[in-house]
Each structure stands twice: as structure tokens, then as C-alpha cells.
Length: 262
Length: 272
Image (cartoon, rainbow over all chains, first blue to last red; front, top):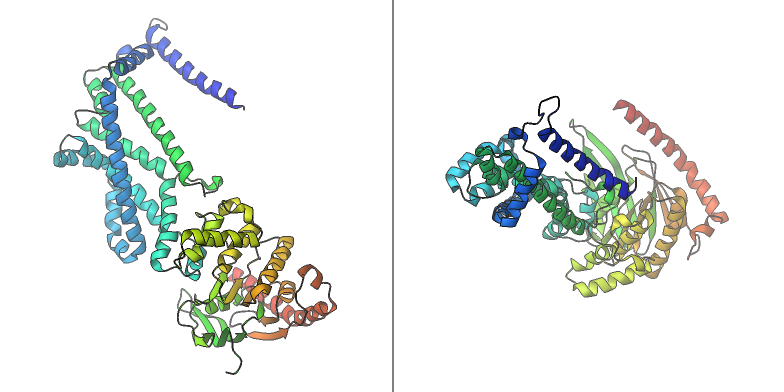
């Protein structure tokens, strides 16, 4: 399939879906509207809501808040996860002691922490950041841990035979290996940072995309809910695209075939 | 000791503890010396512990008993006088070819610019001058071996330990690499301990060929001097009459061990 055909078909899917949605929510079939506007709104209303948000500029503030929360959650979670992952991998005893607790916290659905974070950190951005951090931390932690553990024995011996000290092994062997695992989970961890931010906002906040969706839902403004969802997916796709660019730069040394998205 | 030695193994026994507390003796009472500037090849059937012996000489593995001396000093830690060429890919995949070669100098504290300059020269001498910016995965198996050779040689080790370095390569590339190795070795004649399962390769390259018996508890069972004139060309030396005579002589000893080793390895698989 040529790129053009593929693109045309992809656009076609969207068009068919939107047209079906519009028709079914406005034109009665056998005397009945299959998608009642109260529950499903319609594409025109949703689109005009999105246009209104952007033309009045209210959306930027919310997008900005969500972005800041996601970035903070990602950075703090990644740095923390990388440090602890590295530490545990190089100190098996520490890892063994903490192992059950790591598993326990990781097994906990993080959403239940949201109320506690709201209580501790208030309704501002930090309770959302905290929620995102708990999600990102474990992804990065496990990947970095794995990355250090899975360093090839031969590469390690080679480093030793070339005369590397422990510190040099860390810098030239363990660290790059751990980073490569961390980068390969970049998509997942960035995604989770956004999830943490939006869910946090949804559960209690005064700004952000999650707040926008929650507000619209509160007054049964279905068009607003859908509009919020569309803006959110566009936002995530943009971020994901940015991550792909960064990843391509950082992982040039990796063969394309093993380009994992752990 | 009267003659100086680069590496000497005295009654070296190497044993591993298996999971169920049984002891597996890989090599028993091996006695082997490599003189400075001498090229020694160890040949043996699969699983005879020739790589084990090499790891002992490298200091990566402690023998259960016996002594290892390097330039007449007992080896206590890693063998700092040795460069090691591994059978498997050992390049740092996240470094470019030139960075892989330069690293040996950089960790010794050489300034980066100088290290890169020397690395470029070494890449050129292994025929990869134009591939400096490639990452290992962008190179062929033979090219990766060339980089690995440059990576080891740039540190100018006095001893070169090679563990079936050309094993994973195809037959023609092996011969080309063998010639390259001989050319580089001829320049300053380091002591070389070269492990291979390929008897022809061993005779073509080495001054001495040492044969090991099939494991477990394998021993060194033969030691032949190769008097073929140097410099040699691997392609041509195989046509030499002396080469054939020596090959026949060594093979008559090696053949039985190969069959034994083969039988044991198939039994081991069945036992598992």
C-alpha cells in the first residue's frame, strides 16, 4: 500500500465515523434517534465547543497546567526511578530487603492514592504531580533495574580487561545500558505522566484538562466532555511525537529491529 | 627459572561448583608457558576447557590450585599486561567505532583529542578508516572483529589473549582476519595465546600448537612446534608440504579427543 492510499484510507475512517455520528444523532431512523443528543451530543457541537475554547483562549491555561504537571511528574518520577533502580541493581542486598514493599506499592492501583495526595498536598498542581510520579517512578525503576542487571557479561568483562575501574564501568557500561532501557520505556512513562495529571485533575482541582472534562460532565454538557477528550488525545499525540523525535536522537546506536517499546 | 616467560601456568586446575554441590573439574594440572613474542595456539574439542584456561591467564577466573605467573610475577588480580579478544561481540554497542577504540586510552587518562587521533590511526590500520562514526550494529561481523582488534591493540598490551576470536565469522573472512592479525603481530611480536577449535587455523598462525584432551578434567596432551617460515600468508601456507605433514600428525592425536568430546556432549544433552 502506498503512503498516499494509506493516508486516504485513514482519513476515510475518521470521516465515516464522524458522518455516522452526525447522522445518527440528528436524523431519526424509523422514527427514533439512535444516538440521543443528550448522551452523545453531535460532531458539530463538539467541534464548535473546541473552536470556542481556542478562540477565546481559555483552553491554553488548562493545557498549560496539564503540561506542567505532566512534565514535573515525568522528570521527578524518572530521576527518582533511575536513581533507586540503579542503586538496587548495584546493591542486591538492599534490593532483597525492599523487594516485598516495592511489589506491594506497585500492586496498588495508584488512583486510590489521589485522595490522600489531595489531602496532603492540596488541590493545586502538586497533588497531580505526586500521582503522576507514583506511576512514572515504577516504570523507570523497573527498566533501569533491568538495564543494569542485563548488561552483557562479555561487554562487562571486556570493560574490565580494558582496564576500567568500578567507577568507569558504571559510567561507560552500566549507565548507558540502564539509560537505553529507560529510553525504550519513554513512551509508556510519558503517557503515564499525563494519565496521572489528568486523573488527578478529574478527581479534584481548579484547572487543567481533567478539570475541564469534569466540569462539563457536572452540568451534563456532553459536547464539552467529548471536546475535552479530543483535545486531550491531540495533546497526547503531540507529546508522543516529541518523544519519538527525542528517542530517535538518543537511541541512534540501537538497531531498528530491536527498537523495543517496553 | 632460566628462560623468561610472558605467561606461565603451573599445574593449574580449574573447578566449578555445580548447583547441587558437586564439583566439576574443567581443567586438570595444566602446564603451559608462553615466551615473550611467542604465538601459541590451544586446540581442543568443544567443551575441553580451552576458554577456561584463557580466562585463568586473563585473571577473570581463579584456578582451584596451581599458580599463574605473568612475566614471572604471580597473578593476583586481572592480568593488566594482557589484552583480551572475545569470541562474542564485546564492543560497547552505545559507542561509535572510533569511541570504542579510543576508550582504552581515555580510561587511562589520555586527553580525548589525542585518544581519538590514535583511534583513527588504529581504525585505518585495521582497514576501517572510513567507518569511524558507525555504531557496532551498523558493521558486519568481520568489521566488528576488526574494531575489537583495534580496541585491544591500541592499549599496546604485552600479551594478547584470543578466545576463538574469528569463530563466528565465515571461512573467507576468517582467513582475511588471520592475515590481518599476523601482519599486526609481526610489527611488534607480542606474546599471543590463541584459542581455537580449528587445527588448520592454529597451525597457520602459531609458533606452537598445544592440544587439550576432551573434558571434563581435560589435560594438555600434546605440544608441537610449527617451523613454517615467517612472514606467512594464510592462503599459501596451507599448500605447504610441511603444513600437511604437521596437520596429519596432530590430527591423529586430536581426532580421538574430538570423538570423545562429541560423545560426551551428546550424552550431556541426553542427561539434561
